[in-house]
Image 1 (cartoon, rainbow, N blue to C red):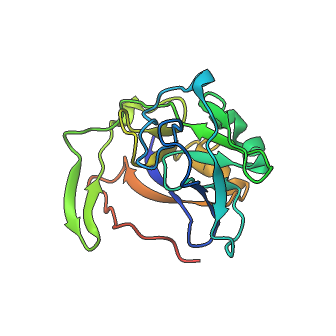
Image 2 (tube, one colour):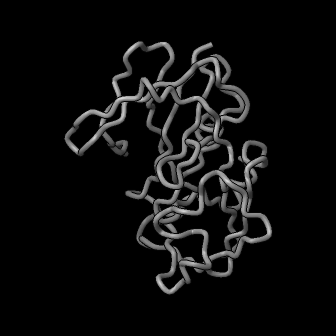
Image 3 (cartoon, rainbow, N blue to C red):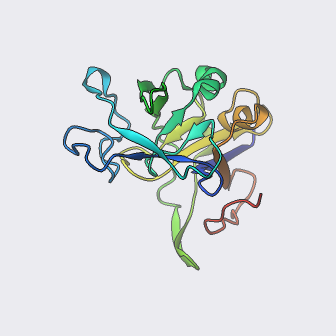
Length: 203
């Protein structure tokens, strides 16, 4: 089995994004701009949707929205229909915006797959670049995940290159869902992964 891991990035150069209203009470809202509140824990009945609005209105409307750079996904109806089987075990929270219903995906899956002793940070043209390392044999189950104990940072997904069906990335690409691009950060078949600096794809 060959495993690849990808970082999820919002394609904010092409698509609209969602922002928090500045007057929203930071003590009331779990969506604080520093990302605190999202450490892979469930909110349940304590969830109160914050006030949000769409921004970058000259851009295209995405299927999967970025929410101010926070490590969550916001899905429109089409994306929710396509991805439901892959996200239904995460926490799905209502997030109304401009009279429309959206679904915020609070990713709870925090597997112990990162080989922290082998991870390196090296200098690059835009600052520190992380060279990732993972335990191949620990990957199983849900393909969308986040690092344990991290309120900020990235969302990740992994896929078995021999069985792409059912993986998060493959499903997004297969159905043409917009709003994300995927940066490969690790390949189990590559001894030293040539991880590049943050770079958006060309369109």
